[in-house]
Image 1 (cartoon, rainbow, N blue to C red):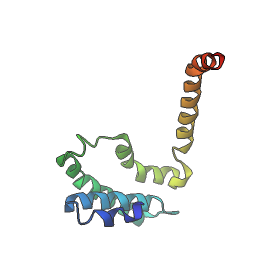
Image 2 (spheres, one colour):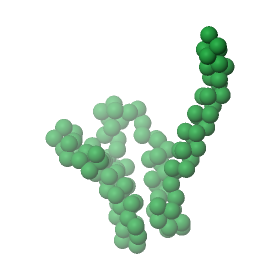
Image 3 (cartoon, rainbow, N blue to C red):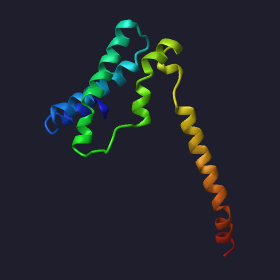
Image 4 (cartoon, helix red, strand yellow):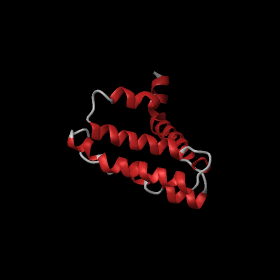
Amino acid sequence: MVKILLGCLVSIMAPSGIKAIKGLLNFIYLAQYMAHNNETLGYMKDALKEFHKHKEYFVKIRCREHLNLPKFHSLLHYVESIQYFGMTDNYNTEMFEQLHIDFAKHGWRATNQFSLQDNEEE
């Protein structure tokens, strides 16, 4: 879906919005490389600069009140993290997201056990 996103928006979004999305998508694609060198890390920095330069478009059109989001902030640390820890496939948030899902389900079940038992008795 992301592969066609930019093409779908070209005729309906202002150039600054397109540039912001293009910068973000370029950054995401570059971050997925299996290997990096100073050149590709430079491309990542440039793509992120383009995104940050044009992201205010979304505040201007009232899509959001602000873009101070943790996921956008974390992008600022990707290049440095790749230099210190290696490729991004060596770390991700998948494990923590799965833990959140599991704990949310356990919590829901624990708080709703009483009502489930009551319904079974009726």
